[in-house]
Image (cartoon, rainbow, N blue to C red; front, side):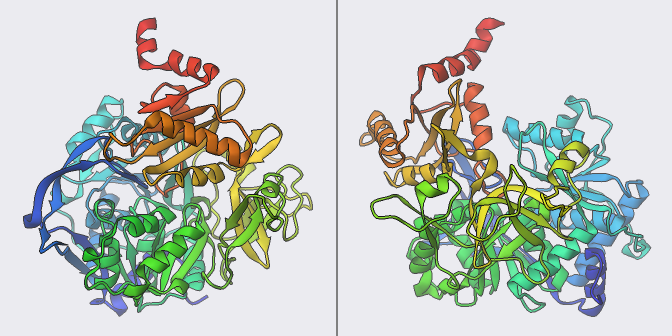
Length: 624
């Protein structure tokens, strides 16, 4: 193999061979085009905005009915390499080589130089979102700090005081907090290429889970290189591509797919701040158009928000004809989203065949499979048969579920098999089972979790094939294409039937245009079904919450032939998502049973109501 072994080698080579080539483009608002404005809070993957009305003092002023253009800061490969070298020398002087460095940066450029500086120093980068004004943010930061035994925190001047106070109050005052934009950095010529062990961790990528007990995936230099080769084969990318989007860089798809992948290729990485996309989804489309992105992507919800919230006036001058590959991954891919987005934006040059539904996970570094939309259409399946883990065609008069194919591993990708999760027998095409993966992209395991690693990362099939990652995802192969059907841990066992929560969630959303995200899970001593459903803001005079609640319960009973005795209608932003956009059903269950949800209206079974009431803050206060 003639290519680089590590990302550090790749970047150092690009800095020598193409120093003036544009490596990084960071977009931001013009400070002079901002004005205060209040609007309802919104929640997107990795971004938590307080419920109710929040004051957004950086709302862009519209010029002639259009959004003000964004400013771009451009960095070439020589400048990026020099920034990484300077920080690496500083980290080496502080003796953190081999240690874990927590990266908490609110500015994209500082985040990029901090992560690359860690790699250049032989330290382990631990990217995470900057803690905000919500308790779960602080808990997650402190959980990572403790779990990873952090040696140093890299942040900026604006965030350093708050972060230092947070970690000191939690008893970790001995961990230094360094603002990279407030110190004099050394000469980059003092940097020396470290002796990097390809199997040593390069990044600890913390996955979703309970905020106080996060799990860090140990992504090695070898894993990064292997997955970059796999992504290159899946996407057909090269040095001339322009790759980017709005995903946060502490999220694996943003970090590895939209930052590290173009830097590995010697291409250009373009970054739109996620909060700008959250406020105005059209910013994503304008970024693709104005910065000539050839590859961009995100979770299904990102495409759906564009379809629903972008106006014709905002699209003036937008040209999406250069968008060659639109990756849809990180959560369930819906046929209605793909079709609706394509129809909505085809007049602006978007081509339906640009869609590339994909499947991946942090435990496999990033990508596992990918395939072009249009090569195979949605797979129509009998919903009742899916409950029994069988794949059959639709039957007259019976509910149908459409599954979107997520492609297959590329020639450089990992090996994939479908396995019975109980017997561990490999299943043939057409049989539903757990997705197992092995290959160089698969990480060694979670940081400091040897027992869990043996069960999850070193699984053995009944026939004796070793070294597989158990993904916990359920899927089926048809003509070599992977179709995902659900999550093993999230299957609902109701009256002897296996129900997929996403089927109920999707159906419920169709009852009203006012309904947003929703989650279904089981709770209580009898494992009764619970639906937590967001209701979008709007005029309250025409919104009959009790009637809406009843409609949801009747719908579930009629369409799925099960009783749902617990429906909570909540404000937008209540339903939790992971940083990759996946619904956190287990977290929502914990919040309900801890009495921490504040519904607009609810109907609860007596057993569940008793548990919630006993755990409510008022009840806890009365007991003290």
